Amino acid sequence: MKILLYSYSFWPNIGGVEDVGHSLAKGLVEAGHEVTVVTETASNNHRLVPYTLIRRPGLIERAKLIAEHDLVHSNGSSVSLFFLATLLDKPFSWTHHGYQLQCVDGAGWVAGKPAPMTPWASFRHHLHLFGFKAIPGGIKLWLRRLVGLLADANVAASLHQERRQPLPRQWVIYNPIEVDDFKVGSAEIAKANLAKAQTSFTFIGRLISEKGVDYLLYALAYLNNNEQHRLGSRSYTLQIIGDGPQLQFLQELCSRLDLDGNVWFRGSLTGKELFDAINEAGVCVLPSAWEEPGALIVMELLAAGKPMIVSRSGWLSECALDACRTFPNRDRIALARTMDEVINDKPLQETLIEKAINRFNQFDPRKQVAEYVELFELMLKKETKQ
Image 1 (cartoon, rainbow, N blue to C red):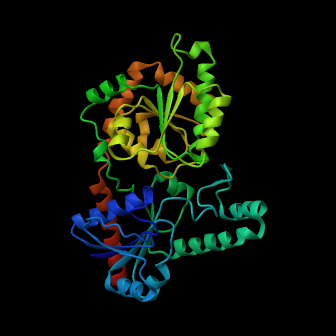
Image 2: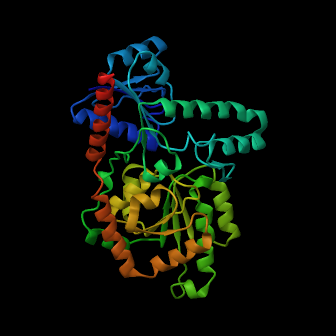
Image 3: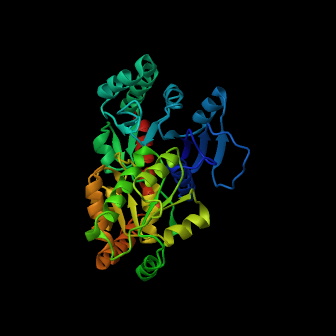
């Protein structure tokens, strides 16, 4: 097959959509197919990849590319190539990484708070908050919904997303993510790594309100201010790996909660630094306040064999299954109690480590790529019959 894969954002930009786009394109080539990636991300950087990468082509070039390929697949929220693909009678499929067909904001999270996740309620909510400025976003929402209804196939990246964003002709295919660089050799090594942890807990992610780091800080303060929860005279500590617009707010919150000596802001880490930080991490907490539709970090933590605590609603708990402990999203007292449970139960930590490694071994990017190939072949068969 000749597959045209569209990703609005792509390398050298960093993020889940970009990683998935690269892994999918690379996997399809390794499976014997010809792939061209089209992106709007301009860059003079060069990277050796097994597929053709075309940045910001003009309208005529886009039409020519579509005509030369068997089908078009869009990775992410953009419908940029749908209308040309329809005009040129090429099958079109679409992977959804968020809730862009359910709400104007695409996340169910606005101005630091949960927001409606059904179309009309979301549009009314944005009108109330932003007035007429919300109208363009509403138009884009209904345009995306129309394309979702007309697409030859939709792909939900999780069972949770399929339930939250029901669409016709929808397949559930987990993202083909390559995180073998984080894979620990054995459960024994992972347990030894945990024993060397410099802090009680670790958070890794962007410092934005959706990630719920403020709830984590409140939970930590709750534990440290209650003698019955403390390990003798030692208080709990937390390292925060990541950066983002909430950094100053979170630092100020630490001061207000008297946590300055207990929380270490390490900034954004990549490559070997991130690998080493994950290996040296204590119990990892992903306290997302919203319903996370997907997160690369949970796969990296499974690969590293880390004991985890994650929020219950969304992709995180679906991905980790029994390799984690969960708590209701945005319930900081429940989070504190879960942190207390895990940090004080060494056999539980070791069990979670073993289950994390076992769960990670159930994921194989080649399997997800094979599911995409099956979908694409089915699309082409239907096209031939017509």
